[in-house]
Each structure stands twice: as C-alpha cells, then as structure tokens.
Length: 166
Image 1 (spheres, rainbow, N blue to C red):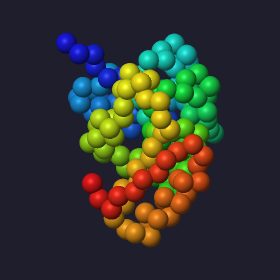
Image 2: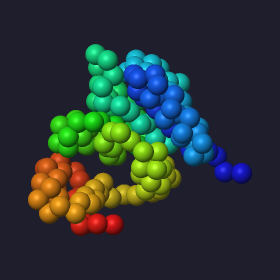
Image 3: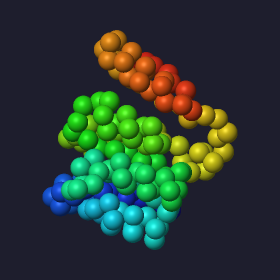
Image 4: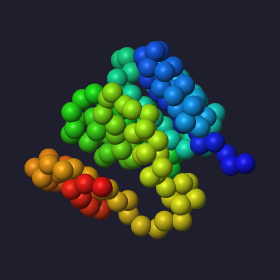
C-alpha cells in the first residue's frame, strides 16, 4: 500500500479550512491544518515531511508570504502553493521570487489542487535533479502570456518557458 500524500492547509477562514480539508481528504490526501502563521510554523517544526503546503494569502494580520519565508528558513524542498483572490503580479509574483512552487486564484477547485499536485516532482525526483528550476507559463492570451513571461524571467535562477495551451 502506498503512502497517502500529505498537505498542510493554512487558512484563517475556519469554514474554508474545514471544507477544503475534507474535500482533499476525499481525494486521498492526509491533511493537517493551521489557521495562523504561528500555528503553521509550529506544525512544520514538528513535521517537515509534507508533500505540499497550500496557504491562503490573507491570514489575519499576517500573510501567506510570512508562512513561505518562515518555511524556507526550515526547508527549501517542501512545495508551497499560495492561494489568493488578488490579481496576478502582486502576492503571486512575490511568492514566486521567494521560492513558491505556484499559486492558485481563489475560489480554488479541488481538481486544480489535485492537478497541480500531480505535476509537482516527488522529493526523490527533486533531490535527483541537478538543474535550475523551470517555470512553464500556459496562457492563451498572448499579451497576458508575454507579461507573465517577462515578469517571471526577471526572477534570477529560473528558466521560463511558455505555451498557448496544454
């Protein structure tokens, strides 16, 4: 029997946390939850073996960026996805610069999380890669795609590719 993938879900909205957590469990994930930056870091300090940290941007007085910064001080290998209702460029770009794996625009569908999780290399695959991180921008609008590619290409240490659709 294979191990269930584990996710740390961070959101200060108790209803969102419970609903998304239950939906992810139904998809076969083991889900741990936190509702503040402090509680997320306490969970991570106890268990640094999560397959993914999925974090809302707004967390009361703090943000998901604070979780990401503190996570990267503990481990640079745990994939981190920021969930935000804000437009591209702001928090999503900041998170990418700090080493986030990606972001999801709210409202988030469970299928989106499952799809992105399946594209994330396993820890063993990440450990075996000795290359620079690569980002793929998939956008059917040429102007938006070009803008995203330009923004992401400015991030040092990444190789950026683009596609019109997948």
